[in-house]
Image (cartoon, rainbow, N blue to C red; front, side, top):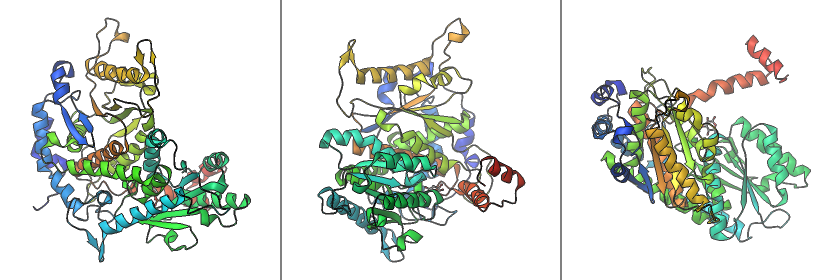
Amino acid sequence: MELKYNNLDRTKAYKKLKKTKPVSLKKVLTSERVKEYVVDAGAGLRYNYAAKAVDDKIIELLSQLAVEQQLVEKYRALLSGDVINTGEKRKVLHHLQRGQLAEDVVHEGVNLREFYVEQHKKAAVFAEKVHNGEIKSQSGKKFDTVVQIGIGGSDLGPRALYYALEQYVMVKKGALPLKAYFISNVDPDDAALVLSQINVDTSLFVLVSKSGTTQETLANAELVSSYLKEKGIAQPKKQMLVVTSKTSPLAKDPDYLESFFIDDFIGGRYSATSPVGGVILSLSLGPDVFSDILDGAHQADRLALESNIRKNAALLDAMIGLYERNVLNYPVTAILPYSQALHRFPAHLQQLDMESNGKSVNRYGEPISYSTGPVIFGEPGTNGQHSFYQLLHQGTDIIPLQFIGFEKSQSGFDMEIDGSSSQEKLNANLAAQIIAFAKGRENNDRNKNFAGERPSSLLTAEQLTPSVLGALLAHYENKVMFQGFAWNINSFDQEGVQLGKILTKTVLSKNPDDKVLDSYAKLLKVY
Ligand SMILES: O=P(O)(O)OC[C@H]1O[C@H](O)[C@H](O)[C@@H](O)[C@@H]1O
């Protein structure tokens, strides 16, 4: 099928959506709807949209929009290796890291699925050798710690996934194969704190940079190397692994203990299921756990091919999000996991969503006249309830909410206090919030009045397991992708991060040609 890339405001369905009347949650949210408005999101994850301000008519128009913008067809084209990242003229192949859904993608004579599988296997074999003591530290000891040095996509996804499963693996395996730490910020206090907490003699370091040129990561690698030398480790690179692309300056250095490769077709924020996440997660949690994450992600990727919007959780979530952004004009979306293990997951989604869809030009570089990606933020519940929920309930803006919740805890550590377990209390809070936001409560005292009509969705599963986590990760990646297609933007480049990098260089050269920049640099004692 021939693909057409049209701006959102040129579609018929969008014009019809603009004319629809808002749906009242107080009227439509029934217990039947809670049971019916559910879609399988893969690996036991379910997307419940009963408390979203949509009805059958709006969903039908969202479905028409998805058809008109050829969203699933564009996803298929992406899977087949089309150059979807038009800005950088690149294929977009993160899905291929976790399984094949289209014909082989061959680039310059290389079957890329085979290349990705080979790198995953290499990471698994390496991790096993570290775990069984075949690969030891320079002083002949077994490694017990792994530290990732990377930033942005080379940090946020892997870090969020590690914390999401740390407890789960400790309970399942009795102990973590290796404990993981992360150094990302060029703020020297970040590295200092991590280094003060570990035994460097038994620590492996994973230097992760797709480009191999990121200032913060290279500075931290040097900082760590010199610290290791100070601590008597003669060859720091022999305790360091590299994850990078084959074309990066880091790829050529044979002194590192081992190197793992990705390619230009895996965007940083989409790289958690590549060796960027795979090396540290295989070392810290085990290759079996990483493989289950890939499996869950693949299940979600497969479901995202479904053309019926009511059976395609990522597509439905994407289109409801678009309706909230472009028709209801809500500028922010909150991610609220009722799971402490997901405490870094909103931070990952901030990059995933905002770096992908924070764009003002279409894929051809032409200005667009409608809103694109929302501001994303979030914190786990119930902590957030005691922090910013005041604004969510009674603030002047309506902020759509994305709840995430699980029936069971990961640890099983719990007891009944005042007639309920802590897990029951957690989920009672979650259920209560959904209703409080949707239905509100009238009070003659305006200060105590809850207007309600604040929409939310709920992603839920029995437990946060590796495969559920993989499905959750892929669900959001695919949601962001579908929204980008619908807005006709390129979700896979990030030119917006460049200007700051360029100006930083001019400051560090101690001679910026902008006088105001010079004043700020002096104020901050850069020179
Ligand atoms: O992996 P690297 O090449 O070091 O890149 C790390 C990060 O830095 C860049 O500035 C981009 O904004 C991110 O998308 C990227 O993930």
